[in-house]
Image 1 (tube, one colour):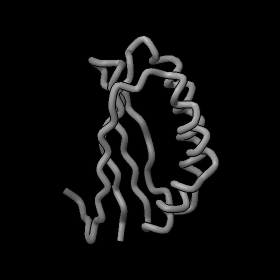
Image 2 (spheres, rainbow, N blue to C red; image 1 turned 180 degrees about the vertical axis):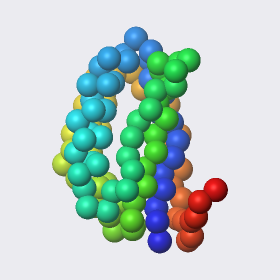
Image 3 (cartoon, rainbow, N blue to C red; image 1 turned 90 degrees about the horizontal axis):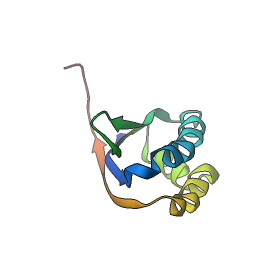
Length: 100
């Protein structure tokens, strides 16, 4: 079963550059993880305070390994250095998929 996590992270727009500095190493390390199909943070072109988050994992075990990873722990610890205004992430368990 594929695991998809999708949502957004809202930050104070003035903290945009600092947020990028935190996100870039997290994304690079996560994309190298076994079981990671897709992982990224994308900036809303009209709102630098809004990052869209999308993750796709081959299994719940792969997603759990990511949740326990050192690079995610580092990111979470460093997140206190920016002003996070909110986060809304949803986890989906996908039983099937195909082209649109």
